[in-house]
Amino acid sequence: MQTELAEFIRDTPEGREAESILRKCVHCGFCTATCPTYQVLGDDLDSPRGRIYLMKRALEGAPVTEKTRLHLDRCLTCRACETTCPSGVRYGRLVDIGRAVVEAKTARGPWDRLKRKLLALGLPNTAVFSFALSLGRLVRPLLPFKEKVLEKRAAGEWPAARHARKMAVLGGCVQPALAPSINAAAARVLDRVGISLIETPGCCGGVRFHLNYQDDGRDDMRRMIDAWWPMVERGEIEAIVMTASGCGATVRDYGHLLANDDRYREKAERIAAMTKDLSEIVPLDELQQISESGKVAFQSPCTLQHGQQIRGRVEARLMRAGYQLTPVNDAHLCCGSAGTYSLLHPDIAGELRERKLAALRAGGPDWIATANIGCLAHLQAGTTTPVRHWIELVDEALGRKMAA
Ligand code: SF4
Ligand code: SF4
Image 1: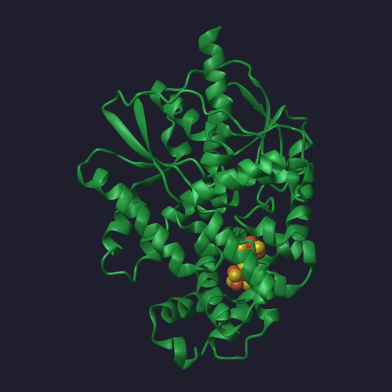
Image 2 (image 1 turned 90 degrees about the vertical axis):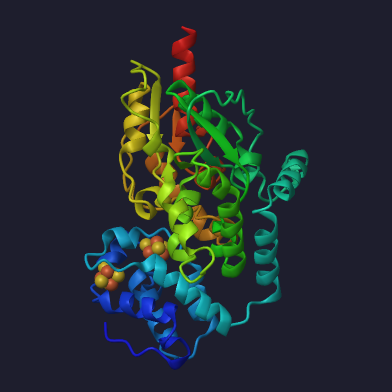
């Protein structure tokens, strides 16, 4: 697509990157078929093709309105369009650039600003979020969003770091409060195969970055790099493990997101290269084969299948642990969680959740499994079928087998 970027951005790194992405788009519209917001809203401006057009116009200096921002806000950043696009358009990178430009050129209303500010301040801070969650659990029946307040899950034992092979695991921001059981289950499973996990508290930066507080998000990223770097320099850890695929997609992108930071560029690239999703670490061959554990419907988060392009690995590990996987239609579509999206766009997110849950429940599973805490909380809010992280199910199956 022919583009003539405006002077304010033309000779910047963002401008050059946006231009190279825009030039690849041939406006064919294949991506609309897999765009969840286009499927729900039916408006071309709520499709990747429409949003690319809006961003192109904004970057070319055309007037930007609240309507432009609304269509970009409504994008889940699920990146299903990237998986579908035959021309290799990196929509996710373009929308980061486009959103920053549109945000700077428009003014949000006071309520919208307040909501976003509260989310940006509260969610990445585990202590603040834990406190708010404890209060929420106390007054749960009175809350308008009570179904989002998950019951407390006990973490269980975290094995001592006894192995020569060690890896760091991101603590995360909301996950330790909502489900400390996830990282503990990962530590137990990896301990059985000879790897000790060391938890590093903190937020990957994705929450603030995707709320369009991009500078604050980058500060969170630098803090995480500073937390991991001494272990990396000492050669103590061989990998950095992500148990939430949303965080994994962000940390794997650190090299790109901090490319213009002379102090952190190289460290960011190294951290990104060392980062692995948990499903890339749990060795299939060393998992004990179990004959029968129950029926599971797996929801592959967008950040796993589109953001990190990881497919089939979780499913293989669940089957090795004895679970029968039930078929799930339209598995490429987003469940509507998308970080803070479900809180900011509850109608669209609710509709997408209903569609996703119908697909997940079709095979009559005993459990729904996922690989991301945001999806877990969002899906659980809409169903009585238990929703678990896949590693919790693997851990429990292995524990049952050992106890038998
Ligand atoms: S993003 Fe890709 S699939 Fe979508 S209109 Fe552009 S070239 Fe076609
Ligand atoms: S990222 Fe997802 S919601 Fe956004 S345009 Fe692409 S497919 Fe649609």
